Length: 72
Image (cartoon, rainbow, N blue to C red; front, side, top):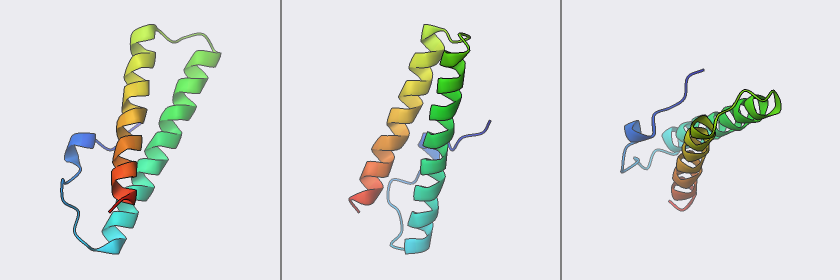
């Protein structure tokens, strides 16, 4: 499972709407995949607290960036 690295997101997005939309779609897909993966790990009982914390942090980071993009 591959996710976009948050540290690779440019601090200033160009005003190109298509690149902004593409980034937004990718982040949204990442959040959906992270949530599904985390839910599946929790439901089958194969999760540990450190893993859950790590995935929750990744989800929050991506949601924060999505919020920043929507305010642009």
